Image (tube, rainbow, N blue to C red):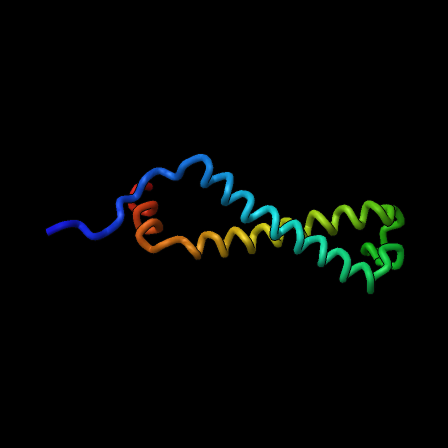
Length: 97
């Protein structure tokens, strides 16, 4: 009887690049949207930083918030990409470890 399961091959480099693009680009767009939405409502100069006198500049707050939003969005996109793998590929990866 033939084995009907597809043969699992090593992931080619182009697929890794594609996966990186599938994670980075949507997360970048989401971070841009979040940045615009949050700072349309919040003024960085009015934020209270636990009573500290040294407060980052307005541009510094925008930068820190953007990279925070981007990293959270990348984690979400990575999780979606990981959950979209076929079960055979996930099982094969767990057995090979």
